[in-house]
Length: 425
Image (cartoon, rainbow, N blue to C red; front, side, top):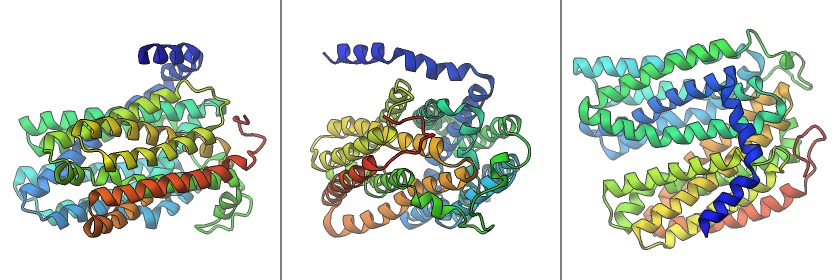
């Protein structure tokens, strides 16, 4: 039955699917997508190896958490500055400079490991450097796709970009396992360092020199960091997208952060079960991104984003109640799919309808909602886990997410879209 359903969906959307895949054959976008995949493979390989390295160095659980926080915290302080840089500066220079600094961090770790001189505080300090440069360059990075494809292709291009990211989320940890077994953590750090080179070269090649022409005259731009943010906040369609992403990240994002606790304490599984759960989430994200390739460019992305966001909360409720390890893996496939469809649809709406002169700052707010929401949600959920237990904390998160997304979605869907938006259905 399900095979007939899947086959029927594919046949009904094969034209949109084929049009989306055709983007991969274009010289600029295809090269960018491949370089991004290589870079993300290195990133995920290091994210697997780094906690194990800290453990092998005798680091406590607090220091491992501090390492993660050091990479995430700069988002709150510097992402808006990164958005201003994306709108007002040469994006080629911003990306090349920040990525080059980031490349030096795993390179230095390789040298320290070979010399036998690495210490936990060094790893954490380098994570902070990566977090700072990532917060400053991510809006410029996220603004690449709309600058190299036509407006009507933005949604499909972002779906393809999400596809390669979720594919790297599956392949990167698998590659890390092979390298850890053969070369140790040094192999993962060396792979990550090397993966920066093709991306830096491609970014310098595909992006135009100098400032974006659209940034020459920004209405109401007073020259300060927060200029233009009021215009974004006053647009109901943009505000609804950002709020949906923030709620999803804050209330549903902690499922992955606390997945080890759920697997070990509630379901009595081992590290293999945890790896399967994480892989299931990545597989769901990949399926969601691929499904978006078949969506009509004229489809209202608000409905997709809002409904799948509420569905993500429902999956969280079911995961909190689930008594089986196999059930958790199945639910995390659905969670990854819902997250991918909701966030990618919101991102497509933001980038397709935001003013080109404010696109960098719009993307910076998206990244702030996406990454900052997870950090705050994880902190609050961690307190709830200590007070109530893992199942109870996730159950509360999921119930709140469903209620909040239904309330926000109702108002968001009633708001008008700008006439220039390519999705007025």
